Length: 114
Ligand SMILES: [Zn+2]
Image (cartoon, protein in one colour):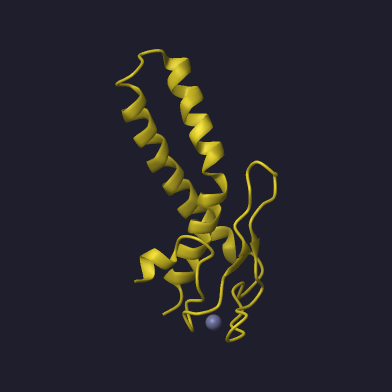
């Protein structure tokens, strides 16, 4: 199931075996996710040209907006204080920053590869 493979380290869109990311990143250690340059299994190059992943920012933006809307609608049941809602949105955005990074790049890779 491809959508399941989007989470975690992700798998190569070409062979379906090699990891796309060598580590997941850790928000507590301020270590960002490291992406392999090519597939360790089949050698497929993930970044096909310079700036290839700029388009992933649009996907990341859409994912973030979706998450923030979800957080807004959930937190408004518990509080009507705008600052509490905004701070909860910022907290969730910070906690999911590496998740969004990985998922947006994986979706971007999968859009242009079969
Ligand atoms: Zn591969």
